[in-house]
Image 1 (spheres, rainbow, N blue to C red):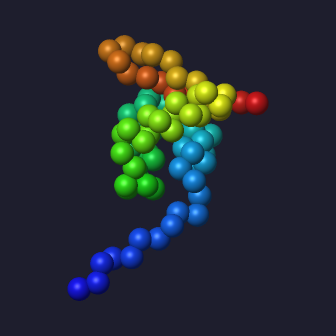
Image 2: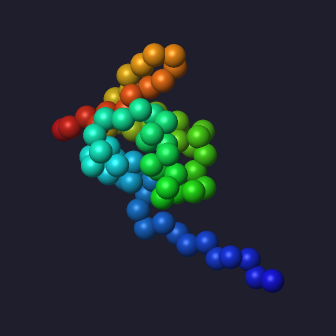
Length: 78
């Protein structure tokens, strides 16, 4: 029985993440992860946090701490 064929995504993960923030505005980290996994089922939480770190260092997003280890992600407009 042949394996199901995987297709390449046409848009990179970071681009989709930035689009979600542009459309929906600031959001908690868990909600952003849920929205991203709707389009990328194979992304893990570790990959997600690395992506957030890369975008924050690049100056695209800002993370702020909320209560009990929760984080809020916001897009930085430039």
